[in-house]
Each structure stands twice: as C-alpha cells, then as structure tokens.
Amino acid sequence: MRVHIPNTLRDVCETFNVDRTSWSFSRALEQISKEGRGVAVLLSGNDYGQGLEHNLASALAKHPEAAPSSAPRNDLTIGTGSQILRDIGVGKMRLLSYPARFNAISGFDLEVVEFVKFKK
Picture (cartoon, rainbow, N blue to C red):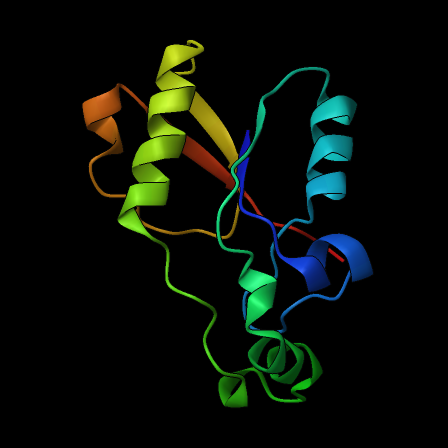
C-alpha cells in the first residue's frame, strides 16, 4: 500500500535522498504488482520537488547526518489519504514507506502492520 505525494527528483529522475530513501511512484507500482495485490493512491498538491535546491543537497550529501531533513508530513495530507483508504475498504496494511508514526489513523480504522522499506 502506498499513498504517494509527487517529488520530481525521486519520481522522474530516480534521485533518492540519502537519509530517508522513499519509493518512487513507478517503483511502488512495480512492488504492488510483484506482490499481486495492493493499493496506490497518488495525491496532488505541492510537489516536494519544488524545493529543488534542498532535494539536490540531500541527494548529493555524502554523510546522511549532514543532509537537510526532508519536508515534514502534512496532517491534512495524512487525513486525506486516510479517508481515501477507508472509503475503498483498506484496514490493516503493509505500507511502502520508511518507518514513521502516523497519529490518528486508527480513527479511520486503519492499522499499519508493517513498513516495507525501499531498497536501491
């Protein structure tokens, strides 16, 4: 399962941040296809790639601790994704994402049972 927000560098150029590597949309779709079932939700909105300078600095950093942190998750985005998942019948899910805490998704009857990290 993947709720995805576009990032130009990651999605088009396959450039990944060294400190928190995340799935590109095409690789998430490949993983879901490989597993034979799953959901991919693509949300529109601000492209995280708009901070191009920040994203390039993160992608090119030789030391992860020196890389700037990625953009913070937006509670509104998490809420929108949660509503969509609830509406299509998702409950327990394996999430294609780095491990993170998602507050209040239980209010949508959602539960993350596993985080599937991206491997380059």
